[in-house]
Length: 442
Image 1 (spheres, rainbow, N blue to C red):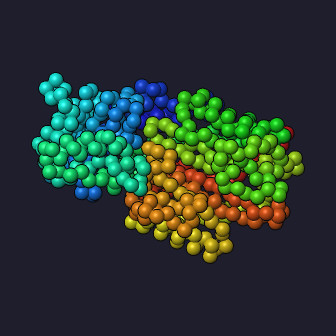
Image 2: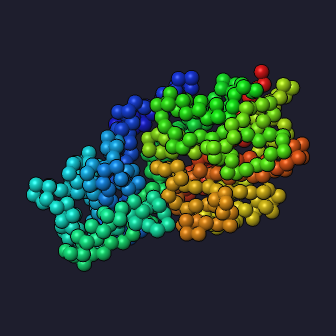
Image 3: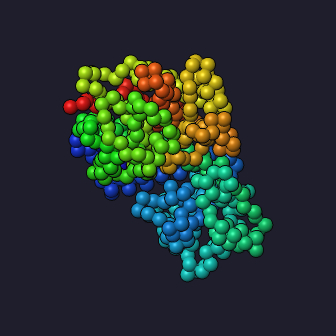
């Protein structure tokens, strides 16, 4: 069944014309999401728990106030927690499968075995504590973290009540699941990587259409017009964006580049004209995975058939910065180390770099190591000190600044593409931009 659905997914993406692309119907999406989750819980989680030395992981949420990690473990037909939902993952050791238990009023599909009978044991906390006493784990971990927001999902009330219930009946103390929580979020499974490139390809197709004369009429279309076309297009595809897209431009004028303005929803709306260099930031959500992509287009002047050489050179500089950066990914190396090495090499080669790459997966700005921020090019304390692990995905997000003598100012080529890091190195999930999209002036 698994291969059948994945095969259908690939067929849909590859065979459909982009004029009317298809994605899986909701029922097939739900089936695939549950299969991917079950596969990851079986094949990926045990190694992560053993790597981090945690044999019991407890996730607790009340309805509509969900821990972001618990949400990744709910079945597709659960759009939120119900009442108080407690998921317990216990490693009995000796190569046995992880015991998946739900101390919850309702069965959590077939992914977690219902392990609380309210009629026999009215107090949910007592039921959870009894389970812990029976299992006798060495460590009981909860999602509590000072520095990683996605690993800090347990609320103050849930933590306090759980701690009190444990203290009354046992001498067990709770520990932070921080490293395990990050590992679960950042590690991509084989099944996920079978479908992820297709999402990225679809994003590239949408960007190509948006940056074409199908959408843009120079002298008429505005940057904001493209943004709202993107929002409508995504709805037509029966998908969602996880952030509001942005479209900005650079042109031969006295205006200087402003990073905040380029990525701000409140940036100035401008009419697109011949000779403009357009930039887009756009991301999709599908099958619980995210895309996050930035590309550029050039608006041809009436006598032009290609972008000017000086702009193509600027793009080459940005591509070279990508190569320098991804070549520095090494197992165990921290984000701050990769950032420092990459900036040093780029500057030595005469490139003016700015690197602000982040993990991607269940969340757009996902858990894992931070590889620079646009306003923290000297490194990011704590989050940037987290080491790289294999089987993780990243938005390779950066820009290279180039002085354009013809424009008498510096411009920035801002690129962002999804890539996967494993034993073979870093590879892009669906290539990267090495040529500008071209828009004709009609």
